[in-house]
Image 1 (cartoon, one colour):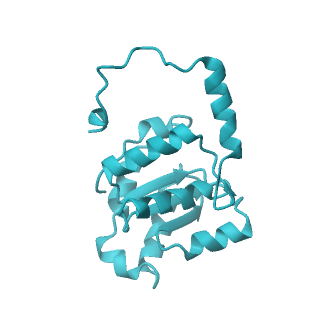
Image 2 (spheres, helix red, strand yellow):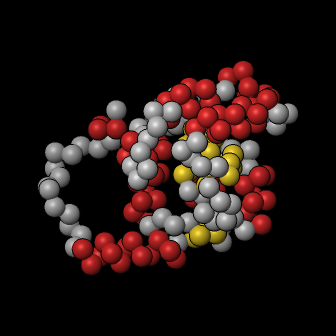
Length: 173
């Protein structure tokens, strides 16, 4: 239960950060990089992601909207740093915008899967992931593949614009 992520009783309904500071922080995300690749995350979010990964210890992390690939690389590295060596980062984007060097790094990372696809086309994604699980690269994990349960849970057809808020993280999928 993520409500126990931290004790909220001491929180007040207002932030200590004023609007100007938050706006400045959010524009800073465009300058944040990981391994020379754009990350598109602000420093506060990076700390929160790390804490969330440590608390939930997921087997699968979805990166919806790959863009340049920095987030997938960072998430995979953070999972390894936290001892989550068998966590898979599934990065999905409707158009592959990754530079060639990032494509090579992501392909070489055994904990990252990239799919050029529309995240709302769940049936198509299921078939592509099943094909990966049955390939020589994914065959060792095919018997214990979490994908049928992952996509069954995701097939509730989230509405556009509320994907992140409608999907709840699961400890083991």
